[in-house]
Amino acid sequence: MSAGQLGGVLSSGVSITGSVKFRNQLQIDGEVKGTIESAGTLTIGKHAHIRGEIRTKSVVVQGTVEGNIFAAERC
Image (cartoon, rainbow, N blue to C red; front, top):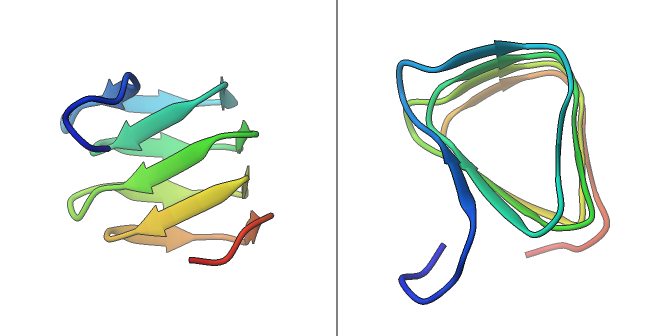
């Protein structure tokens, strides 16, 4: 996310088990076990760890993903 864009952040040290749904933009720096769904943009930070399925419009992966990624757009 660039500095003028609004979005959410799941900080490092945050752990979520279950489904994560968001609308516009989200950056994950923590851990998610479950599904992530959005029509927006997901950024997976370099310290993030995702275990589960990701379905988004677009995704940038810098961290670890254990599961399938489905993105509507290619970067």
